[in-house]
Length: 184
Image 1: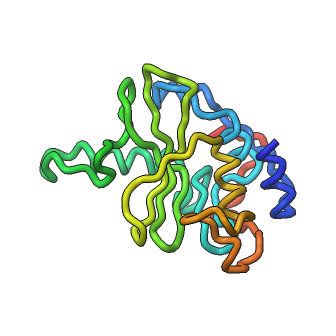
Image 2: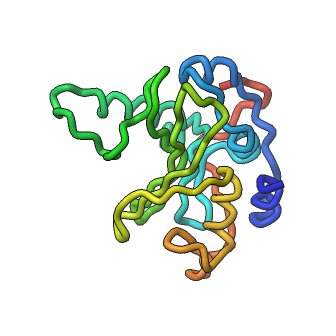
């Protein structure tokens, strides 16, 4: 329902990207939210309303590539040269079999959108969001697509809603077009 609302809101024609979810989820060690998979297959990676970055698939530069971002975040979070401090405190970046954050979106204002994933509780994906202007993490017990819709369409969805800026509700895909029928 919420994925369809995002599609209608943006006037986007779903891409129907073919994704090897088994390989992605095997690397992560947990299944991903079903509605995120629908968003990913419909949009790939790119930018909503010129300001909300959605990580999906970006075969060009990889700027919007979900797995590439997660691997980079995990590498930095686990780098012993940087000490025990995590960029997502009081959490850590999710590592297979553990509990932590996986980023799926952000904004040009440095807001971050993540899931709190616990391998011991697969199927639960609260959205955690942080704005550097407001500080601290905010928890939302709603689907990825509902959170995204509310950001784009609900002017009262504070502190993360952008509808009050009147930026329009567009989607611009990341670099590189998906190769028809090719799995990620």
